[in-house]
Amino acid sequence: MNVRWTQRYQRWTWLAAVSVLLFADQLSKSYFSTTLELGEAIKVNEWFNFVHVLNTGAAFSLLADAGGWQRWFFIGVTALVVGVRTAGSLGRRICGGRWRRQPRGSRPDWRRGGLP
Image 1 (cartoon, helix red, strand yellow):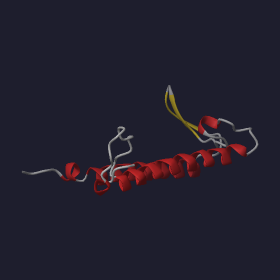
Image 2: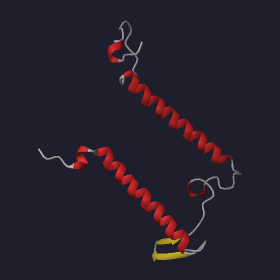
Image 3: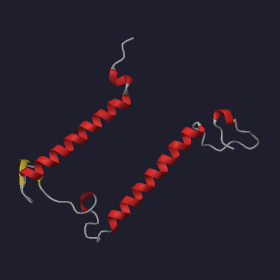
Image 4: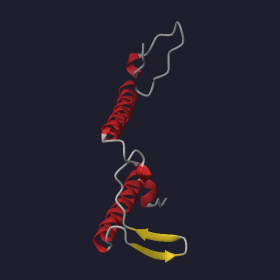
């Protein structure tokens, strides 16, 4: 049986694809920020242009004039989401994937990682 490398190592395949995309993204940003002056545009076709702008807010300059608090707000939200996700993943690994409540009267099997 001949299994392709990409099928055998799916996580490494995704990691490689994401790494290539991140590298291409950073390379294109670096190229256009050094090539174009601020506000300059290159017309690719009738509906697509490359324009050098600076985004001072979140996505699409959301909250750009909010005074700086939005940075700490988004950092806090990110830390909260990452913390909850990490705790859930570690809890599932420690408890063997048994996060559901046990039926009344049943006793957990601690050898299999059951919860009380």
